[in-house]
Image (cartoon, rainbow, N blue to C red; front, side, top):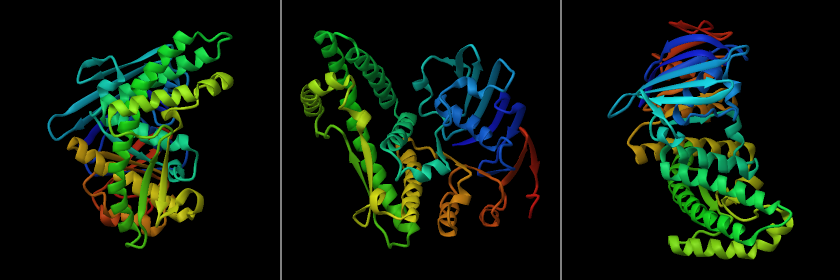
Length: 371
């Protein structure tokens, strides 16, 4: 799978742009605040219909304009695809896939599969659990419609249950209704997260050994707020018991205290908790291993090679990690944003396409201007 071309109108700081991409490596270079990240943000938008930077679609519209437009074309192993997204400042966005209107975001899933790796992702190990839950949700939602639906329904139910708990008088029958919905969707989320992390653990452990030349062993551990059970029936029954136990505290605190919204993911390097005791270098290696493991998971799950967006991350990695990253990604289409081109990248990818960005405009160069 690879993206062939992109068309933008009034997207972020781009007035109008049509550009073709190399099927292997695209290096997007320019000074800060020129629109490098905006470009790959538009590419990412085609995968799940949402930005990785903002939850407000209006932020994507060029200043002073009412509408924005994004068109992305991609070639896949079986069939080519086209995604078009129109965003209006005052109305909901509209999405079309191959000329057909997309009524639900889940209809985009398993269409154009993209992994984003940014400097913020290097902090995934040491930051709060919400960051790690977002990682799990974003990656699973891209390739599993069932997970996307369960997560979406769970969030809506959680919102309704919390609203119910904040009422002056809590109607027991209404609370029970939300409980049963949470049990169904929450149990499915727990089980799919457990399967995902178990598989990602296999890939990331192997990658981590490669990065560290065998000196470190990485292990991932799912830390669910409600314990994982082997069968669906056992999972739902345990979930029900946990909600009953927490009923008094939920009423007192006026919020839901148990469920997947409290889950976490633990990292262990040579048996030691990396978040609490790992060095910054170890934490960054864990994050890199995790991101590269996503690509292996995508390929096994879908049969497609995921597209990797590296947003200003090369400067954050030391030479060893940077070299490993470049050497191992020759099968995936890469988009690399950077202020300065690393000669090592061009050594591995001499045919890489260089795209220079200046104030929302692109200039394609035969060779980098600074080499």
